[in-house]
Amino acid sequence: DQDRSFGVLVDRSQGGSSLSDGSLELMIQRRLLHDDARGVGEPLNETDVGITPCAPFGNATRLGAGVVAKGMHRLTIGKNGASKVRSQMDQFFSQPHVFVASAPRDVPVSFSRPRFSLLKTSLPDNVMVLTYAVLNEENTFLLRLAHQYGRDEGEAHSDPAYVNLQDLYPEHDIASVTEKTLSANQDRADWEKRRLRWNNVMLEEPARGEGIAEGGFVVMLKPLEIRTFEVSVTV
Image (cartoon, rainbow, N blue to C red; front, side):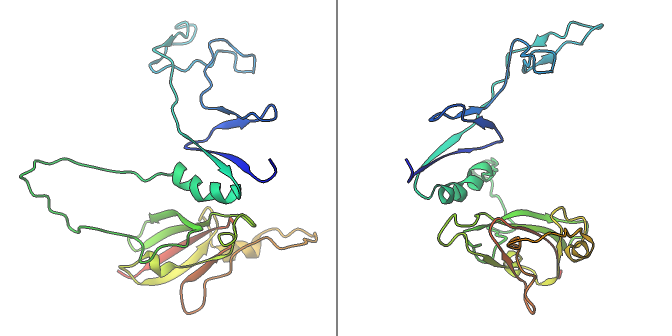
C-alpha cells in the first residue's frame, strides 16, 4: 500500500526490526536460559530475587522467578502516518502522573489553593515542555521547549511555532532570559563564538529558531528544534 503507513507507539525504549516484508518484531524482554554465544559468557536469565555469589564463593545460581516485562503498544494505520505518530508519541511515552491520598470523610481537607496551572494560555499544538526545573536560586528556572514535528509531517504542525515565555510564568514577571546550549552548561551566544565551523558549502542552513524578540519574551521553534533557556523571574 503506497498511500498508508503503519506505526507502533511504545511506552518505553525497545529494540525492533523487520526481518521480512510484512512483519515487525519488537524485543520487549530478552531472557535466555542458555548462553547465546554473543559475548556475555552466561545466560541472560534475569530473575526477581537475584543471584548467588559467583565462584569461588558460590555457583552463580539464579534465584526466584523470571522477570516479566510488561508494556503497552499502540498501532497507528492510515494516511499522514508521521503526523499521526508525532501527535501521540509524547503523550503515550510520558503520561501524566496521578497522585491521590485518603482521609476520613468527616475530616475537612484544607488546600492552600484549589487549582494551579503553570500555563497562562495553552501551548501551540506542536510544542511541548521538556524541562521546567528550579535551579539553585529560588527565582531562576531551567526551561526546555521542543517542536514535536519534522518538516513536511503536517500541513500546519510543521510550521515554525511561537511561544511567549511569559505565558509559562503566570504568577511572576520575567526579569531576564538567557538561551543556553542543549545541556545548559554554557550560554548559547558564547558557544556560537567558539564552536568549530567547517569549511564546506551547505545547500541549506540547518533549521534553527531565531533569538528572543526584542521588547518581549517570544521565541520561535523550527521543526524538531529543542531550545534551552535560563529564566529569572521577579519574586
